[in-house]
Image (cartoon, rainbow, N blue to C red):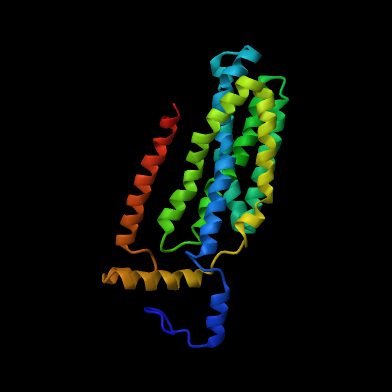
Amino acid sequence: MQIIGMQALDEPKSVGKLASLPQTDSAQAWLRLTATVLLSTIGGVGMWSVVVALPAVQSEFGIPRAEASLPFTLAMLGFAAGGVAMGRLLDRVGIFGPVSVGAAMLGIGYVIAAGARSPVIFALAHALIGFGSSATLGPLMADISKWFVRRLGVAVTLCSAGNYFAGALWPPIVQHAIAAYGWRATHAAIGPPCGAMRRSRAGLGADRAPPRRERSAYRRVRCRRFSPSPRCAVASPCPCRRFTSSLIAAISATALLAVPTCWR
């Protein structure tokens, strides 16, 4: 067995061991991507629910719009801080750590927000919500990038699209629920589905990405096979594939940004 640009793997044991490991761009990788998009769509509620609930919260507490927007500010600050913290946790323990912590913080944050008796408590609860919601964007994108080589651009774009799916799905649901049951009952109902993300181990499968050596070998073989350019023999993706991935990502992002408009 010969791999272009790399040392041949002649030993049957090495070949068998490599075949038993998770493979890039496999059915398992696509199944993992599907579960990742679903998690991102569910956890993305933390970035959108407060915007819809703002008028009702402002009316109940009798505060000006500037004070009523404080929960959204703290949610975004929590999201920014959580992105760094969850990324570090991902590097240390794998993807199940950030997803479990994020799910727990989302559930706790929404329960606290539902029972808040002052705008300050409501705003602090959204700092927890934003922190927990950060686990469903950056860490998931970083994790899924380890499972794809040939379709890396498409996979990462689809993973990030979960946040846009959340922006198209959750606002109409939250608005209808607030009109029918009130914002407190709505926040209390959002908590359990977010907490259920902690049971995502079955959907994500193994918390073990394909080895770096296998990804590098596959990248070099595919790049040399599909492009005659000498620059494609390096370990990084070749220019033609980078351009194609960027083009697909731009088209997908444009289409997804138009989805919320269709709801109006």
